[in-house]
Image (tube, rainbow, N blue to C red; front, top):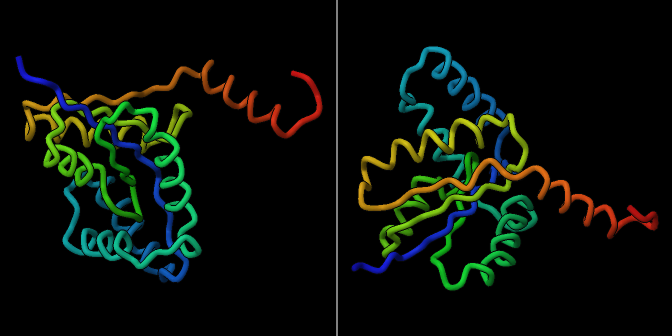
Length: 173
């Protein structure tokens, strides 16, 4: 019997770093929209722009979103019982979900669960893109169990939001 090595990937949206020219993002988004409308694979120009933005220099001051997701990851990690851990971003930042999966597999993961910070239903990243990426990766890694811990139990989200509200309110709920 082989031992399963578990991994967890926390996926966040990703932010545009301060200092990144807005015209790069505008052009990337236009190319993405055209590609999706035509149901084509990404063009070399789109991939080049995506890579340029994802690798734009970042600091906590220029990309507070990245720093925030890293802080959530740091708080989550002690609860993972030693499981391998990685962060990933849907857009604008590295690593991608594909890169994070490959990183954990390289470290020996045979079972990977993907979490997202996007809790609410209706988002294209959480409902469409992440599942599509995992579906594309499964045939490439048939010996790795790739799971997506989504959708969230909205009652649990409501409880967490109620606790947050209590922290900032004098009224009893």
